[in-house]
Length: 64
Image (cartoon, rainbow, N blue to C red; front, side, top):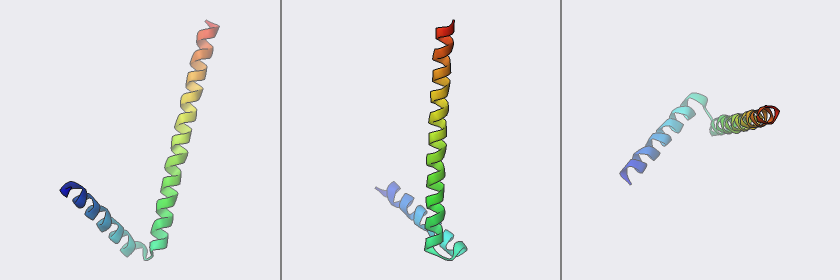
């Protein structure tokens, strides 16, 4: 439990630092939302790339 408490404290300290730099909670939340959306987009791109690679591998196997 101590580890999770220190982890939470670290996150809260980071958020406090961001608020001091940015000046508003809304801008921090907007930046966080944008970052999360980018991660989801990257995950979708990676999954699409894997699907394309798998499809091309299967097509190559059928061709040979």
